[in-house]
Length: 96
Image 1: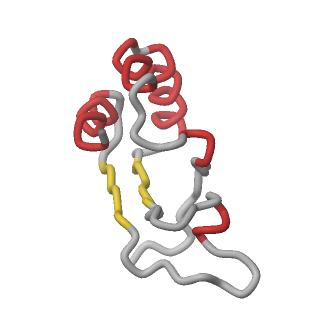
Image 2 (image 1 turned 45 degrees about the horizontal axis):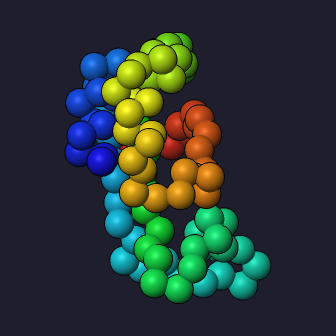
């Protein structure tokens, strides 16, 4: 699904999309990725991000995606529980 959605994100202004399959996601003492998404035994945490050139481009892209019929169609066939997704916007503070 990520490979199919990537070109759509880029069409709307994304400059990079990265999707990562968890292969070393340890349990933490107080919190961790698995608890954050209520992962069950046998489930793997996927971490991804989409990079945009600006917040304005990102906000416009999000609006376009919410109204795009392709996204609505994909939303009916999600291979994961979308209610457990965590998302947000971040501003870089270090970029080496």
